[in-house]
Length: 89
Image (cartoon, rainbow, N blue to C red; front, side):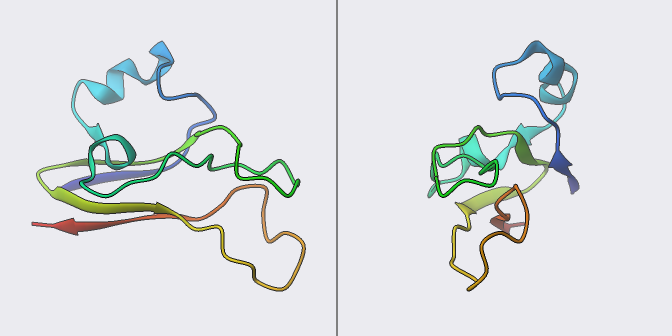
């Protein structure tokens, strides 16, 4: 299995990601259960941000992808929301 995870600061359809898409898939776009929430909040109370954080994978099956927009009781932990994927292998 291979995983590449991080903030790529580029949108899903940007050609800058083409070299990655040649070898890996995005769990956000392929998981059986997924969401389309933005991964960045730009320090605003919104869930309409852009998707610029990714969990790329190879040789695994993504079952569920989630952008975690939980209230932690403080204004912002980061300008990005945490993301997670449950995989089967």
